Each structure stands twice: as C-alpha cells, then as structure tokens.
Length: 122
Image 1 (tube, one colour):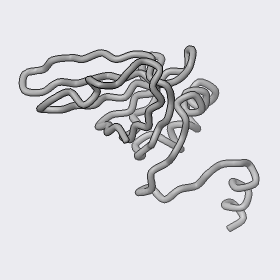
Image 2 (spheres, one colour):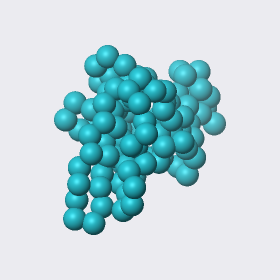
Image 3 (cartoon, helix red, strand yellow):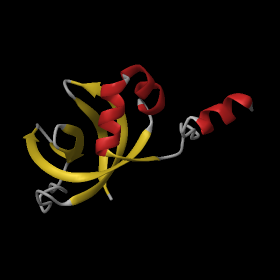
Image 4 (cartoon, one colour):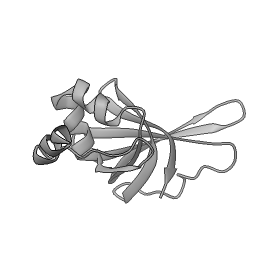
C-alpha cells in the first residue's frame, strides 16, 4: 500500500496489465529517451492507445499481406505504428497532419523510435 501511495505521489500511473494505457506519442517518446529502462517497465509488452499527428506513412508489400508503418508525434518525437492487413490498406485514406489514435502492443525503443505493433486505428 505504501509503495502504491508513493507511486501515486510521484505521478506514476499504475495500471492492470490487461488495461489499455492512454498516452500521447510525444510523451511516450520523451519517457523512452529520458529513461529507457523505466519506460520499458511501464510500457513494453502492454497495450497502448497512442495519440499524435501523423507525419509519415510507408507501405511494405509482403507475400500475402501488406504492412503500413505510420509515424505519429511531433518534431523528433516519433512513434512508429505497424498496421498489417491482408486486404485493403486501412491507412490509405489517412492524411499527413491528421490527429490519430492508434492502439497496439509496445515493443519498446528500437532504432530511434518507439515501436507499436499489431495496431488498429481508432
């Protein structure tokens, strides 16, 4: 109980492992660049709902599916979200600068970005 109260006083949100954690792309990125180990403990392997402006999109064609990587955030604060589909590209109608809410599993900080996989656009 004392540990939970000290976390609350420090501004640390505690969530059940099955809960979706709501966070902005910029905040998530900054937490990872400030303290990767602490951010991994909070977010890696968990379901996140990340909000931010879309500033990039890349589509990769695969054998029987396609993966769209969408980049959300501001400035250098970037979160990369992978959306995989077997049919039509669900990201095709998105526009640069559009505010998005993307939900998926956090894989941590990889190659200068926070990676979110198995994403859906909400």
